[in-house]
Length: 402
Image (cartoon, rainbow, N blue to C red; front, side, top):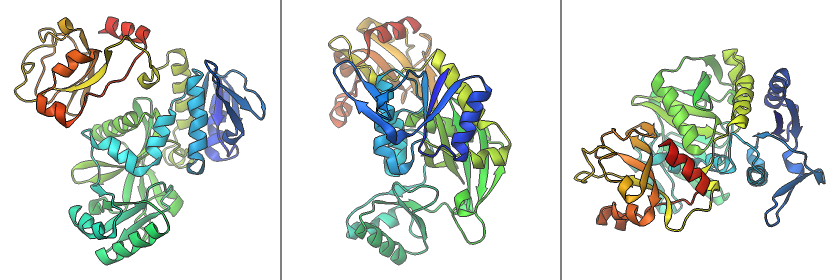
């Protein structure tokens, strides 16, 4: 495999370890400065220049995009995607995870634990917003801060109001979050690679510091996660569109609470605390994906007219409740069920003998008009069917598999 690591810091621990792991496994690897690319856009021929010369061919890239270069870095990653070069973290995934509010908005429609949060702009809305999430103390976060920078604990509402006003005056967008007292200055960092947690550590704040980040002096220790925390971490990363991610969780009374999903997690803390070869796990995963890559459906834009993908919710009282997929008549309407969401479970390629229940959410491919007719009138008015256009060859493959 020929791998390019996109990084503006070739001597930092994470970049060095990733390069070392690739070399040890016999791969060809280069560290390329993300800011030295030129993006050339022409009809039918997306390409990249590197240091003003045509870029040689790569099998895969591993983006290490810092917060300060998010826009340019994700543009480079997106160009590699258009050139069919594999990346474990898509440009969309990186952008979505970088903005804390956007990440929470995306996660909020799924059955996944989140600390109660609110985002307001008008000064008169601040106090009511704080009351809605349970009152002070509250956490105030700058939306694009990293390593604990821009995270403030406000002990009472007056202090919170003053801090928010000051930050907004400085043109900072801020998020207000309920303070999860039971976490006691601790959090979990789960390192997700593919569909598994390959390493996990508990970070503990030192002294009066409530932030547990290692960069803030926090102490890190290896921890074995129970299945609920592992499943939550993997689901959060996948929902964000990331296959390599550091998922930060609080240990709440009701289980894991997602704080952040990091698209460029550092390796020094997790490898030091666990003694595990996390860099090697990342390289091995990428090498496997190069041979048989996942397909990002959003990149497939052409399909027969009137066909697409839709997310269908089966409400109480639906004629489909209690029927199997095979007896539901969906195939007769030219609709194929690709996967079934039930609670926190996702069943891919469900069998035709699977019985449907109220509350099931079906990801289907087929005739849009037929799928639209399955939505109750009231639900149809509330929200439109979301459809994505797909590549015909991909659709044929999906139908054969189901």
